[in-house]
Image 1 (tube, rainbow, N blue to C red):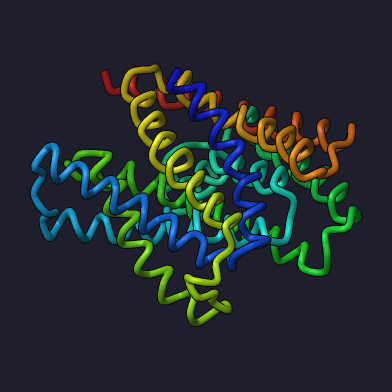
Image 2 (tube, helix red, strand yellow):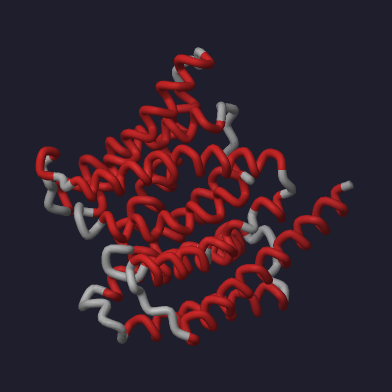
Length: 297
């Protein structure tokens, strides 16, 4: 059930975010969402579990993770979806396993690039090219390329955060840690939004925008992060990571129904090619990890 919740709601979240950026500047929406969700996480866990404030070491780790995962990944992806279809944004986000492999190879030279990995990388890039080409000529406005670049930067930021978290582990309650990351990121986004975008006063924010924020907080942040962390703890990694293959298709279908976004044969074909590439890279990476583990034994 936790995996189903993660797969469905995170897919729908892309569509809801697209609705929200039509009512509110994207970074302002991201800041409000992170502040409310972070306050609820930290407040509830402090009251219920009596958890202490993070130590200096924990806070440094939380600060870095907040910048990478919630300012970079979440903030930029919300900004990017202002200019591109929600389905394309979700598909670009699904490429993060590919970039993790490339980044680790370039900066850490930890694993060799096998033939399967290379084929997966080529498929992933080709699939995105097909979907982007198909969408570029479908009433997406003059800032389509900017949206693609912002979404790509968000995906890379998530990849960097994944690598950083794996190589710099800190003992902290995972839900409490996510809450603090959200709170820290909301403060940073508050500053950045005043520098980069127009800001709508609170009393002028529309009811529709508040409905969107409420959905993103309750379902996109609270329920789904709880479900995601729980599924990662109790399911095999290979099963828990299936959400990454499902999210883009949920987002595309939901966007087609709710936002009338284009859903052509080429877009579906490009999406399948992309997800196939992600699957091959994941498969190759897990196989390499297994070989390394067996060699160490």
